[in-house]
Image (cartoon, rainbow, N blue to C red; front, top):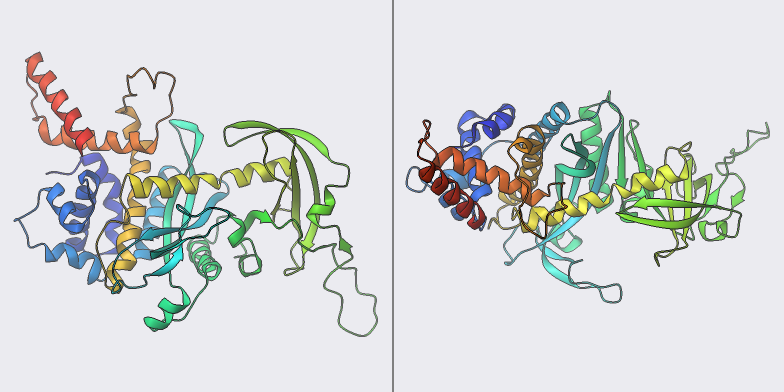
Length: 437
C-alpha cells in the first residue's frame, strides 16, 4: 500500500537523522502503524501490505539494531513543528510522566510503577510495566485556535531503583530526567525562550534549581510551603551574607489576607474564586523570585490550591491560565494509548524498548501537524444527530481523516470513473474500511 504524498512530504525532513534504507523502513512502519488495529510489529507490517516483500527481521532491526538516535528524531520533529505551527514568541512546553502496562520479566526497564488509571486517592495501586517522562510542545492549530495540543518531542524511560540495579544502570529520578529533557531541548534552541508547565511532582527543588537559563516554569505549590522575602542588602559586617529575607505567610495563611474575587473560564468551566497573590521566594531555592497565587474556590466544589511561576511580574489570573494548558498533555497520553497504541509493540531489548513507544508518541505529533497543515481541508464533520453542534475536531477525527485519505489514494485510480454509481460505491468502501481500521 502506497503512502499518502502529503504525509510523506511532511515526514521527509526527518531523513537527515538516519540512513536512507532505515528511513524507508521507518516510513513503512509509520504507514502501517496508522492503519493497524493492533500495533504489534507483525500487525503493523500486515497493515502496511509488505508481508512477503521483505523479511520481517529488517523492520524489527529498525528499533533493535539500527544506528540512529531517538533524541535526534525528536528534535527533528520539534524543528518540523516549529516551522509548520510554532509561535514566534515564547515556546510553551508541558512535561509529565505516563505508565504503560507490560507483561514479561525480560523487558528492559520494566518494573512496578504507580498506575493512575486504577488508583484512587485512598488506594494506590502499582502494576508491572514501563514509565515514560515525556516533554511536549504546546501548539494551537490555525483551524481550531481555541484548543491547545501538546505534541510529544522527547521522552526518557524511567527505571526505578530495582530495575536500575538489575540492568546495571545509574538510578535517576523523574525530576532529574525532566531536567535532562529540558536542557537538551533548550540547548538545541538557545536563542528561543521556553516556558514549561508541569504538575506538582516536577515543581520542586530538583527542577526549579536546575532550570536552563532560557526556560521559565509554572507549577503547583504546597499550601504549607515556606516562603521568604528577598534577602536584605549586605550590611558591611563580617560573615556570610543572608540568603533569605524575612519569613512570609504560607500559602494557606495567605488566605486570611484580603483578596479579590474573580471569574475564571478554565477547563471548560466558569467558576468564581477568591484570589490572593504575592511575590516571594521558596525555601529550597531562595535565589529565584516567584509569583505565588493562592485560589479559594467560591463555586464548583474544588479545594484550595496554590500555584507559582518563575515570571515574578505575571498577574495571578495569567498564571492560572498558563497552568490550565497542562491538561492537554493528559489528552495526549490518552489518545496515544487508546487510538495509536503507543504501548503495544512487543519489544524487549534495550534499544527497541527505548525507541518503540517514543516513536508512537512522535507519530501523534506528526498526525496533528499534518492535520493542521493539510488535513483540515479534507475533514468532514460527523453528520450525526449527536454531533450537530461540534465544530472542533478531536484527535480521533484527525486520525480518521488521515486514514481515509490514505485509503482514497490507494483505492481510487488516477483517472476516476464518470459513473456516479461506481463513485458512490468507492466512497462507501473507503468509509467502511476507515472505520474498521
